[in-house]
Image 1 (cartoon, rainbow, N blue to C red):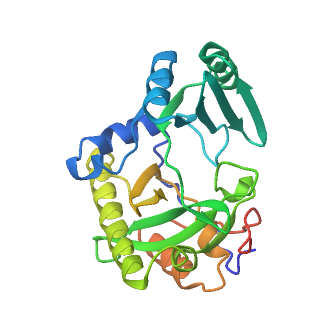
Image 2 (cartoon, one colour):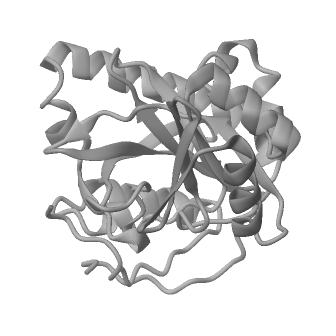
Length: 269
């Protein structure tokens, strides 16, 4: 549970369309290499990306909290597998796989994205949430970074799906040296600021973003998604409240206030 309770006031600026945000970011040559190949979901795009990468994520174009996200794998010998929530399905033909996925999209717009094999912490996949905000001085600043660890039986790291929250330092230090960790954090700040600058050119009312970033086995960061109204509960449940206090203060300077009654995630495994 959060130690801080802040009443909501003011309406944040939201860009819900993941496909639109991806296209804006892909126009930046410096960001393009950090974005997994993403296409609109179709029979052709699914077939192409699975053949090229063997694992993809299929996710709603509009959506949040990890709802509706599916992990799809090509296992070889004509066998396919995918997971939605806690359910697994296996198929022995691509057509069978595609038609089942199509049913699970419920007629809504979906994307297919090259899968990134996430690093694990104590056997569980994790990603990072990186927050960048407009500073009181008018520039852009990374104000928070935290690790989100997936529930053992889930494919997404969201607290609403049973995920856990730990400090980025605790989780990343299991994989890298202090100097590597410092270098990665600097790289993430550069990526975050470049991302918000690019998006701000298209959406000038934007004042903050939350990036969901995967780290692969080579310690390369990948931008999985960018949220324009990020949930700051992951920071609110950390014992050290430094980051959430900074996030709240910066938000107040551009008229954003947060309701942080956080019960979904926990700060232990």
